Length: 255
Image 1 (cartoon, rainbow, N blue to C red):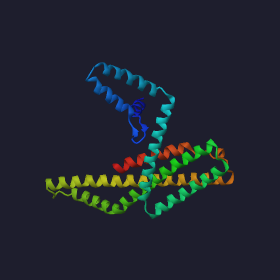
Image 2: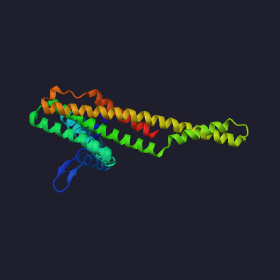
Image 3: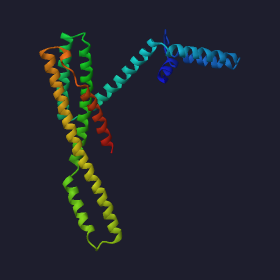
Image 4: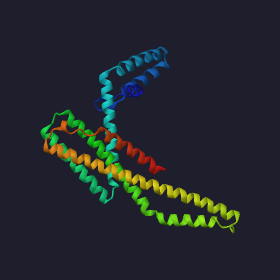
C-alpha cells in the first residue's frame, strides 16, 4: 500500500514546454503556502489530498500501472547487472554463456514462428531467461572461487599447519612464542576450512551449471522438433533453486 501511496503522491503529468510535472506535489505545496494566509486552506488541502490519495490507490487501473512501471524498472536493473557480470567473465566462461544465450535465441525464434500467441511459450521463455541470469551469476561465482584457489596454495598451508603443530609440541618455546604460534595455527585452520568450503561450493556450482545446460538442450530439442511449448514444461523448481543457489554463493563469497 505504501508504494501505491508514494506513487500517487509523486504522480507526474506531462505539461507542454515543461515536461513531466509533479502536479500533486505542487498542489500540496500551494495549499501549504496559502494556509499561512488563512488556516482554512490547510484543512481544505488535507481533505482534498486525502480524497485524491484514496481515489488513486483504490483504482485497480492505477495499481496495475504502478506494478508495470516497477516491473520495468526492476527488469532494467537486472539487465544492467547481467551485462556488468557478463563483462567480467573470462574467455572460457564467456564462451559458455554465449552458447547458452544462442540456444535461448533458437527457442525464441521457434516460438515466434510456430507459437506466437501461446501463453505457455511466454512462460517457458520467462523461466529460461531467469535460468540464464542464474547461469551467468554461477559462472561469475565459479570464476571468482577458481581465481581465489589459484592464488592460494593449499599444500603450503597444510605444511605450515603441520609444522606449527610440531613446534607447539616442543617444550622450548617461550610463553609469548607459544601464544603467537597458537594464534597463527588457528588462522591457518580457518584458511583450510575456507579452502574446503570453496571446493564444496565449486562442486555444487559445476553440478548446477551442467543441469541448466541440460535444461536448455531439452528446450531447444522440444522447440525445434515439435514446436509445441506445452510439451516442454520448464522445471520451475530448478529455476527457483538455481536462483537460491546464486544467493547462497553470494553469501559464501562474502564470508
